[in-house]
Amino acid sequence: MKANLFKYTTWIKKYKIAITAAVFIIILLVLYLYLNTKTSTTPISNATPLNLIATIPNEGVTRSVWEVEKIKFVFDDYIDDKTIKYSITPNIKSRTISTETPVKHFEILPISGWKEGVEYIITISKDLESLKGNKLKEDIVFKIKRISPKPGDPDFPLVDFVEPGR
Image (cartoon, rainbow, N blue to C red):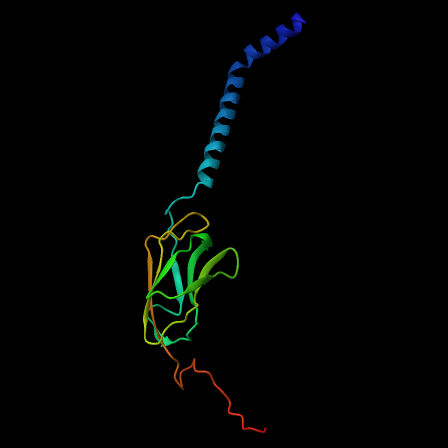
């Protein structure tokens, strides 16, 4: 048994530098993996801000919109629908609609309807977050004014006249 122990001690002395280097490399690798995992799961706050890329209809448009037409906001990244906060002035009853998960957009549906000739200001809070944790740089302010469709407008409904008895 002493001979066996002597053999291992001699081997350790002979390869001491290699063993020390291997242990050092393993410690560095474990430390690198630990730090890399910690930073990659932490949101990079506003490194790449969330951006609004489209609204439907376009902002500021005075156009024929139906009383209960939805306003759609489209973003450049998937949004966390739990962070959607908005206000409408003048105040009307409304709700948001997201039809799929995850979503890059949401819609605001006016439950009490857009009133004729009224300019509405919709403010979306800068606290809106992407699933990556990135937020808007600032609140989004959107304006729209409702007018009713008139005959000849592309949005005006076409109704065929049907004679009684036919």
